[in-house]
Image (cartoon, rainbow, N blue to C red):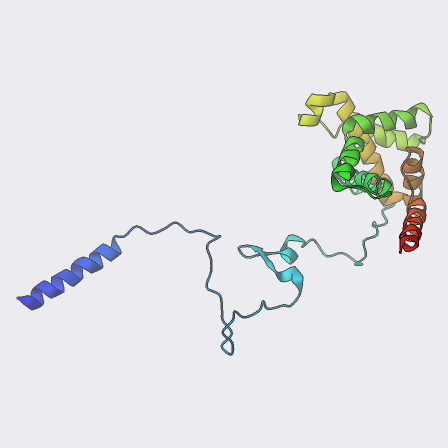
Length: 225
């Protein structure tokens, strides 16, 4: 009788375990980490490169930066003779936006400021209202070529989605700012020298002037020592 009760109680426990609800799969849950058998610490990642450090779950920095294979490993812009035949206006505005901001950040780099001051000055210049005013300067002074004005007309239709900027400045201003970014992206790929001329015309410091400012800053720092 005792044996029957013991076996029945074990069946009840087993049934209780079997009917316990299972947790839903969580991709971010911690995984079992392989340990190094010769050490009490965790084994290092398969590669010593910092690019393989895990970010979230199984995603690494190298995975985030993966893109289709291309020739060359430098950071210089690819030479594209006819960017309009390869990229649409939105793609050129996308890269043009970042190039424009690099010029703005480089322009305000010297003299050294606090991060808050850097951000305030750059933010004021990269607003669509400021880009619109700078574009008007180029148009009013007839500084652009016929082909460049055609690119502006092609790129002004990029910003058609309602955003905070369009609500603040209006669609017309936002579209004109997008057309300037499209032109900058186009020239970045096709004619870097002409891009530099236009950015200098708009009042941004050039690469050569930045180098001069760096040398002056180093000279002042050495004089203080």
